[in-house]
Length: 279
Length: 72
Picture 1 (cartoon, rainbow over the protein chains, first blue to last red):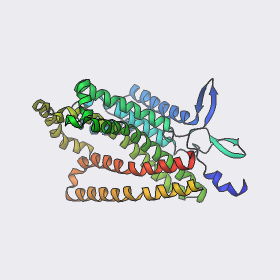
Picture 2 (cartoon, helix red, strand yellow; picture 1 turned 90 degrees about the vertical axis):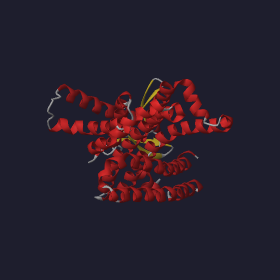
Picture 3 (tube, helix red, strand yellow; picture 1 turned 90 degrees about the horizontal axis):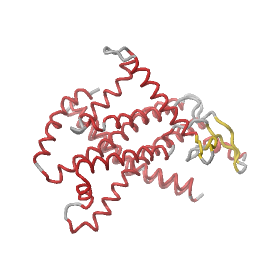
Picture 4 (cartoon, each protein chain N blue to C red; picture 1 turned 120 degrees about the vertical axis):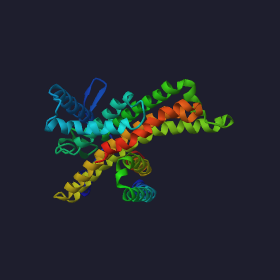
């Protein structure tokens, strides 16, 4: 299609393209991105834990910096932070690396030409994992299961259901579906936010490269690097907040004074945390 | 064709609300920071959460736009 030359240059598929099939199982290019991200994280973890020194060297402090920083944020959220700190850190690092893989040269641009109904499109070998709804929905489902599990663990099944039913019991027929939908909408908004941001970033970069190939995309690459970091932070902080809410709902439910005592050192803790977080 | 127009309208109109909301959120955060620069660490996390929740509405518009172009 000669008149659509610019269009095919900007083409970014909304779903991950399959590279090859293993039986009925489709291996897509976003899986390559996810595997690369987890491989990079595993290698970094293995390498730096093997030669971890008590007094960290340059590289070690660079690697420990985001971990320290996130841990200080998670530690300020509730008294039970040790139970979920590893998960939040895992979310943060995995999404961060998965986002930033999309900014590497060759990702999304090197691939095979694929002809479909007379239209030639490029199927890249690597696609950033978080530009695939399956990946972000998977992460959001993990977060969902974990915060429901924490709610059930702290308040019991009855307590959790009581939270869903709401306070004036006669309003239950109205409030129960609303609460249920608001729980489920967390799942959708978590996954859609990450997917939408990263996918829109990919489309933006592709458009900018097509419009002005020299120098201009560099500015947008910098912007996308910041967005990738912010979105990783947003996802992990929201997951953390949902878990904290699930834990704290018990205290709001009026079982009273013991809960307030548990909360207090938490609030006292904040100024010292602020000093650690302050950058 | 109608899908493209609808998608443009969806994201354009859908960006108005979050744009105003983000402006308010950021201005208030900056105001708080100006009043008390030491509170930067305490403001940071609620600030990020607030702008994330505001931005989610814009993302919904984006998703609708994407659906209109790619699915419908």
